[in-house]
Image (cartoon, rainbow, N blue to C red; front, side, top):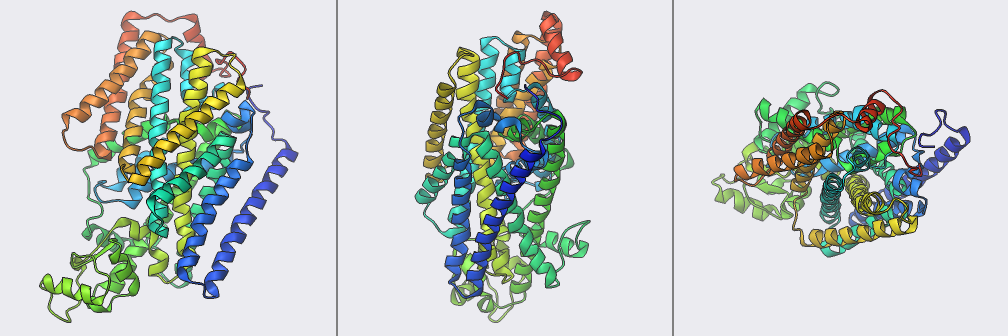
Length: 591
C-alpha cells in the first residue's frame, strides 16, 4: 500500500512516544549533569566543552541505532512519522539553512528578505509540494517528475539538479557545524571537520531518512532549549525581552538602533526584499532535503499538518534567535558604553582577543591594549567609550549571551550545541538526498527498476562517503562560505525545478517542453549572475533564481502551447495530482 491507514495504530504510537520520551530524558539528564558540574565549580572551559561534544555523539548514536536495510525506511522512514515530529524536524533543517545568515549579518543585507523567504518556502512545502509528494508516494521531487517526463534527457537534468543542490547544501551544513564547533570550543579545524564528518555518516548512512528525521527532531529540541533557557533566565531576573509585538517594544527599538549603528545589517529597498523572499521561497519549496520530512509522513493530510507544525516551530526559532541577538546587543551596550577602556568586563576583552569585538577599531586582549587603541583614536585619557567606539560581530551576539549575562558556562555549551546540532542535521539530510538521487533515482529509475535493493543502498552509501570526504576537505581548509552555498543551492533549485513543477501540471507539456523549460531557467539564472560582475550575495542569487524560474516556466509553457499536444498519460497525471488520489507512480515503491 502506498498510503498509510488514516487512523494511527495506538500501540505503534505509544511505543514511538515511549522511545521519544526516553531520548528526551537522556538528553535532559546529560545537560542537567553538565549544569550540576557548573554549579559545583568545575572549570568553565570543561563545562562549556562537554555539551557540544555530547550532542554530536548522541545524534550520531541515534542515527546509527536506526539502521535499516528496508527501502521504505531508508528512503521514507517507513511512512510512519507523525505530523508533529515531521514538522519539528523540518524546522531544524530550515533553521540550519538560516544559521549562516544569522551568524554573519554583515554583508547579507537586511535579514528581513531572507527570513520571509524561508518562512514562505516552509509554507509552500506544507501547502503544495509536500502533500503532492506524499499523495503520490514518490520518494523525492525528481522521482515524481521523472514519472511525468519519462525520457532520458529530462530525467538526467532533474537528477543532476537534485544531486547538485543537495550536495551544495550538505557542504553548507557541514561548514556551519564545523564553524560552530571551532568557534565555541576552540577545536582545530581538521579535527572538527573529521569529527563532524564521522557523525554525518553515522546519522545518514545506516538509517537513511529514518536516521535523518529523528536526529533532526533531537536537533530541533536542543536548539529550542539552548536559545529559550537563557531568555527564561533573563526574564526571571527582570530583563525585558526585546521583541516586537510579543516582547518589550521599547527594548526592541533600542536594540535595533544599536545593531544598526554597528552596521551589522543594512536597510534594503522593498522591491529587493520582495524579490529575495520570492526567489528563496521557490528554491526552498523544491529543495530535496527540505522535502524529506513530508515524504516520511503517513498521508497527504499529515504532510499538510507537518507543514503547519514546521511553520510554527520555525517562527519560534526565529523569535528566539532574534531575541538572543537583541538581548546581547543591549547588554554589550550597557556594560561597554560609558565605561573607560580599561574597566570593561573580562568577557569583552576575551571576545575582542578572538576578533569578535573591537574596541576603538582594534582587537585587544586586556585593559592596557584597549587604552592604547583608544588613545591612538584620539580618545582622551579617562574618557568613557562612546557607542561608535564599539563594534561587534553577529556571531558573538548569538553565542555570547550566557557569558555576557553571567548565566553560566552550562548554558553557553547548550546554546552552542543547538547551533551545531541544526548544522549537523542539515548536512545529514542533504547528504542523504544527494546520495539518494545518485543511488536510487539514477540507478533505479534510469537503469533498471528491478535493481537489487542491496545494490541501490550500497551505491547510495558510497555516494554518502564521497560527498562527506569533499565536505571534510573544504571545511578543514575553511575554503567555503556557507551563506553563498545556501544562496547558490536555492537559486539552482528555483531555476531548475520550479519550472518543471509548473509544467508537470500543464497537460500539454511533454518531455521536450520540460527540457526547454529547465535549460531556459538555468541559462537565465547564469546570465543574470554574469551580467552583474560583482561577487554574488544572497539577494543577487535569489533574484537570479526567480528570473530563472519565471523564464523557464514561460519558455516551457510557450513551447507546449506552440508545438505539443495533450496526451492521455499527461491528462491522467494532472487529474490525479489535482483531483484524484495521486495514483501516478505505477510501481511499488516499498512505502
